[in-house]
Length: 327
Image (cartoon, rainbow, N blue to C red; front, side, top):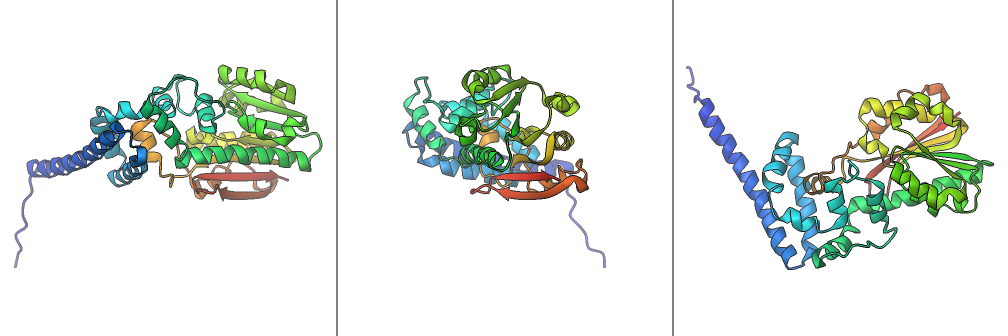
């Protein structure tokens, strides 16, 4: 017996697809409408729920549908203007230096200085809420951890040299007891952003910190001109590097190590719950890696040159740290 199968033509498939798409749009719009209403009443307690729901939508939608939802539903919604009253979020979205996550944004995360521009009441409330964001808490923890690593190299090596790649404002050095005590013989702060380096030189030159303006590509090709180091690290760079570039940079950092030296790199992990908010509201897109992804970045390093390698996460599980010790 032959079973007759229903025939579904292209037009009916489009209707089903449009219906599914419409439901997704409506659900997201309702979320944004509810958030806008509560923010209008200066109720920022809704923000944690917004962050969580945006990321659930992102993970269930898939990359193409998520991009469409941002363009069609989030971008024209008035809640965006409300959320951009918070300066950290607004700076990421506007990218005055051409990219999100610049040194000024990191200073905001660290609360290095009080924000000097007058904020709206909503902007001020959201600025306080931002301190609780999982990603910002991990950024603050990263700074503390890096300062500890600088102190540790000073404890185990005499007159150590340190290299910070894509250094930003090098705020971790200002937390380091070894740097403040001038126990680091030289800390080279490398970045391609001249404005960031001006801040570093003005504030930290007296502590054996030397600035070097260069791109990451220049470092990969000619890093040897800087000499060798006991500790080479990069905090936020890898979140922006594709696989090929990250492998090349890791190998170049390792080549810059003295015998017994240590390399450290950090990368946000794909489990970060703030990703949906960062992409939809801040237009901030990173490259995320888990432990397997980080391990693969060491492929350009000869195995017999590695004395030890470790992979750890921060307390919130948001950032993967990889350290590699040279023989």
